[in-house]
Length: 109
Length: 126
Image (cartoon, rainbow over all chains, first blue to last red; front, side):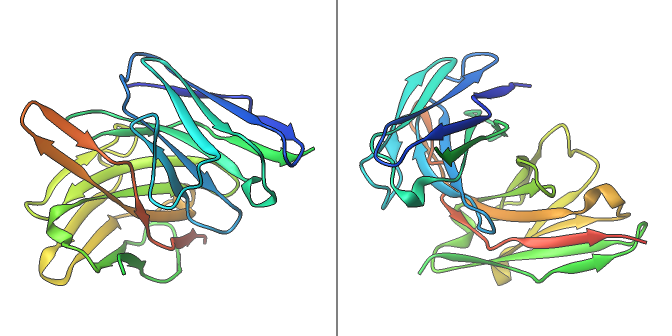
């Protein structure tokens, strides 16, 4: 089973600054990687799929990169509404089996 | 509007059975996989399994295989997650989410889990 490891566990950044979140896979997942945002009391929201494609309605300040085992989610200029927990998720081509990372909490510095 | 609406909160005793639901609307329910995700109190997301309502093809995470049953009734556009004997450790929020997967010649394209239900809280306590 592929294990996804996110770092850091908590990231403290000031509004307006850039945030960089990392996700590592225990073996290559190609570009089969998605990112989600979850705010307290809410369901997760899809941000990125295919490692770098923004989902519908996601602002351009969110970008994803990487392939193989190393992935990054970058938020270029943090807005107040961006402080949340972020999860990466890998998906197997076939059969469709998915695994989440443990999450990174992005907090206000 | 594409949406998934889940059944309401449940409070159960250990050993009881339970079936929660996830009803899709605004899209072709039989053409998209539906996944289930667990979130224990204060913890992260855990992917449990997935079903294709069109033919009921079902896959489970190894961690949840044998612990839960995922099913669907395409006639009413509803997916289900069920337990035969609940444990206190099943206390969690459970989400369903649509998972588009497109098979084209020489490729299988995934689009993440793009539409989520509001979640169902399950509390198991004696």
